[in-house]
Length: 423
Image (cartoon, rainbow, N blue to C red; front, side, top):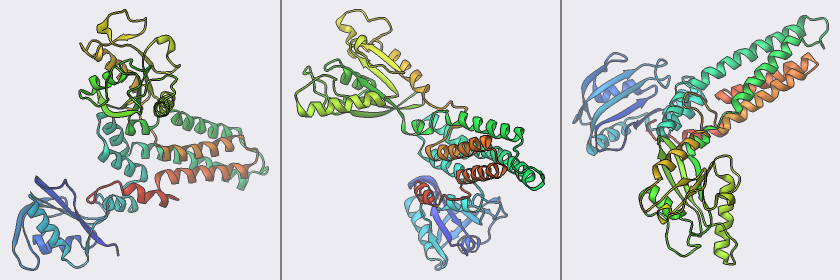
């Protein structure tokens, strides 16, 4: 029998309301010892919560009951929505801890039970973890689409198609006189599904959305890079002097532009130098320029590195001089051009992110989709039905790994460890 677990499922007190959740086979009986009679399933009622040993009144709270398997975890659940003071919460948790057969939940254990009981699949669990960690509107929307089963529904469609192709191949093996002949329509359907998966693999990955778009500010020494970083951030994060080579290492600042997460990065000025420490900074800056999703270049536009998303900036515009064609004139002294630059950065950053109305894959999910694509591509070119059937079996296995039905024990602890105790 599974353990009965409990935890504070809301934020740490003090708060107006705190939610304490009990889950497992003893949930109802344990809650009754504190709240007395429980309301009907999926019905809320106010109850006096009393210590099960002394009978002392602990709080007056709203009590909700959910019966498994039709609950979020697939098991019996009781929630106490109590007052959110530290003393109240601590007293209730202590009372639950004193009951035989109960223990405090491990991080993510409620969600893990929902996964193990088939209430959600692994992609939905990943979406919940991302939703908890979301800090921008774009991250929230992407995580919510995943948590609500958007990818699970798409995978289900793929699985049905592969299952149908497998059945077609098995029938041909069992009944066709020529076992080696592969129906051209079967090969075409395998290739079509492989092409569809390839299109999904070409979509921008969710990691950029989670980690932020890398926006690198680069250029020669004393071009105004650090001043620009400080002007955008609104505080002095980078050292600014008239001495070239002040910035020796990169400085990264997380920001949200219009709901788009970015990592704004200041770098050492790019030049040849005999200074050992500065040379290390220049080397790192060069690597960051190559890695940048968006490159903001301060300096002569003719010296700018080739980059798919290059923004040329004519800095220190307050000192005079006309901006080269295609450059944005910016002054950190007068704030000229800052808004236009930020708008351009946001536009370029959005171009490397998944569309807000489109599902995107993380690294783990993409690997299994790629495995399925490879198996289907092999099936489409195979000239033996037995090989086709085996490739289709491999494709089904890849989808099972994608949803967590098979071979994912190595990722479960890491995933559910991202959750808080009460989730």
